[in-house]
Image 1: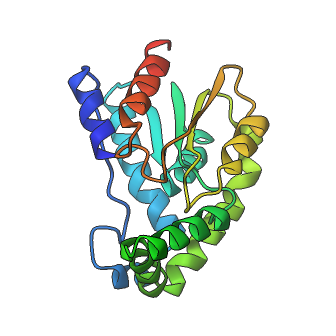
Image 2: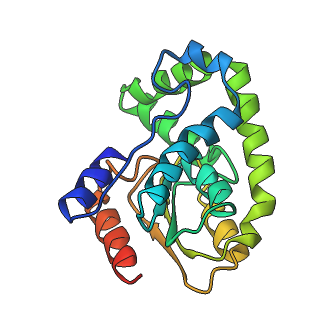
Length: 207
């Protein structure tokens, strides 16, 4: 998210990037927080912007997109942008491809990354993510604000079908969906990041 945040700042937008509870510390700190703490972290920043008179939009990456959907039900937003937002987690076809490619090329970095992610994610954090997801899915049809969804087709963390699920169920009168052929989960840092920046800037500029 930071490269996109810096890009938008350079275009004159006032950008705030909340750090979700437990995410500023080692993974073990996630044992002590719940999905409500994550929502509260973002909500505090949003309330501050609104009370200062800003017209606010939320750009939510991954789980942050779920939090954005939650907050869109409570606060008046100009727009909601979902980047790599999960409905269906883990793209096993892409994971298998990455593992086989790593074995073939004798490059084990991606394999080690998968092992690290699984071993370092506390059960409490995984459970609270599941709860957040289950509580957010029914809210998607309630989305009325202008809505942008962007998803990388090489994403191994979020199944790309998630984007169409959100798009089809969103009730926004103005909604757009973009797929990126060469991008994985971290679309703000990947091969097509400049395209992401331009899509988001163009979308926000229409409001």
